[in-house]
Image (cartoon, rainbow, N blue to C red; front, side, top):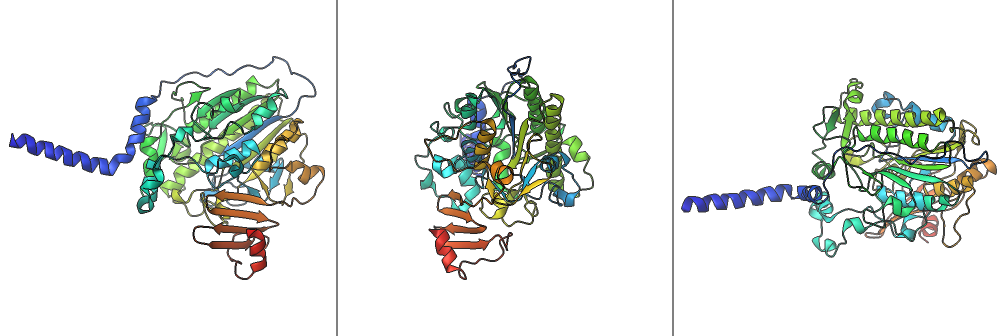
Length: 494
């Protein structure tokens, strides 16, 4: 009897210790029980007309949004990951064959609000989608001693946090113009019914609803993993993410390849299916967001990179650029390249928690912060019929402008029943060239930022801290002018 009691006590103690160390595994375990992942399924896309719909059809729209790309990840700017030894020729070609906006900005410094701004043309705060949804368990692990349990009291289910249905999205407005709209990849604008892509105007969807996914099963022989044991975010992701997608509103199922390759191949098929009608393809890759998983062939091709983290990350970029090249080739092969507007951008800057110091070089800061490293992103548009190759424009443009630029190109009026913050940047850059002078705003709770005429103020209401920079002279934000320019500080605060 005593032996049984001792064993019971030891089991309780051991179980308690295991729970205290690995409690954050529970969300993933529960998710896989409640929402299991099925086996691979073939996906069939709706087929458009067999002949072109008309000779004067509006342009096709391809919006490529990559995830957590660092400003210094691509070689277009003369740098690139691993000292520029991993070329990104296909991404670079979008800029060289079209227009490069030297001061392109994300809608926010984190994933979800940026996507909301892009699809609605409104600063995310206007739509009430100011924060990236996260479950309390994630906040508890990543905040450490700074976690306040009372803040999680009555926290709504994460899947109910999404872009409000009252917002008008790009695909909803393009529908009356005859567009067929497809979303591929990461959604992150709500998981519950009413928030999903088909509820927000898209005709078809293939991807995942949450903020991240595994690129391949962790033990797949075709993947090389890099686990960042120093990073609490990474420690949370590995046990809780799934290797899974949905087609439209289907149950989850496994893809059949690395996620980047999977989305690229399906983007090609979407273009083939819709070549004879106007289409919007919102191609939202999850690379190079963590968890870091490179295809083994890409990793093996980069043996010159000694750092395992950097080599894995660079392998992901190599696969991303290759996939984008396949998509651009599909436009040519299907005879629609000249009349397709291609946008390329990232949802925010590179993440500091990856552990690679130069991702956003030369800019200061990281994803989550509103320093330039968090929000200054590549911003390219290619449209061979209308945009001269090698064009540039220096005024600040942002994700909200993609909305208005697309509508203008498609001949669709801007909604008149709400404030739209974006403008048609091609009108300012090419049609009637002139500087674009309007304020850009970012907010995350008490952390507020405004940029106007090259001056940028960051204000932290919690402690009254301010950072004021003249980006015209100090684009990397080295000299805080808050004390030396009180007039400008007061103007931008107002």
